[in-house]
Image (cartoon, rainbow over all chains, first blue to last red; front, side):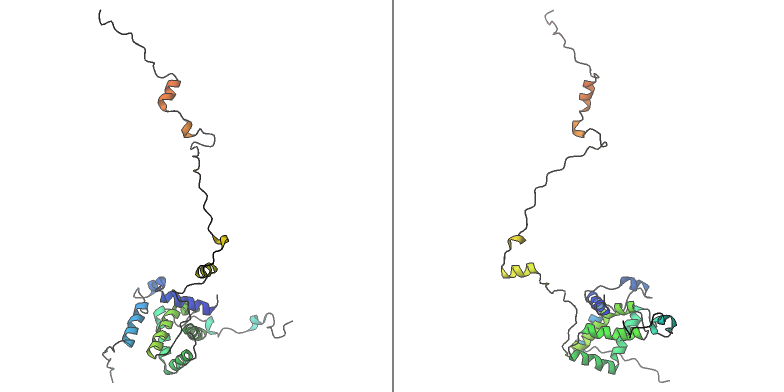
Length: 61
Length: 185
């Protein structure tokens, strides 16, 4: 299998909602941050009504 | 003869220690790798490049594989982690394309896509091929019960009931016919 084909297959799996569970077990928090739900929320946030966010005030010091 | 081929054994003399894929990768965690790639795409130059590729009808899967190969070649992460990050990266580029109202094509097979087979095509055209008609399955005859007591054992059906066996062996006393009692006496 070529790299391009493997990438396509990986994208298909992700879009089907399949996540690397074993990889999640290795994560420090036990779950992955960048999941399908994360990107759905991000899409809602970007495409939908603008969500007001509190800007982090950086210390000038 | 291939004059441009490498000299046999040249790999033994080449110094390949400085290739990125001969060192441990910089990133080994999924979230870190996705975060790195998203930050990379958010760079104005990379964003322009991605949008330009989308506008020349490049598929998102092609863009993703190009970006991932770049990261692998400089030793940011291994090739297996690159494959794991392909999905999130494609989804992120999809959101970018939607936000910019740029038409895009993911480049993967749609799961609702119908695969056209010769049988499906024949059905659609109304062609009935007699060779394709399903054969009627033969009636199955029930298998005979195998004897359970070994190869030479008698089948269970042929074994006489216990009382019959006892009768044959003479174990049951025959009822003697009693003479009718003389009620009158």
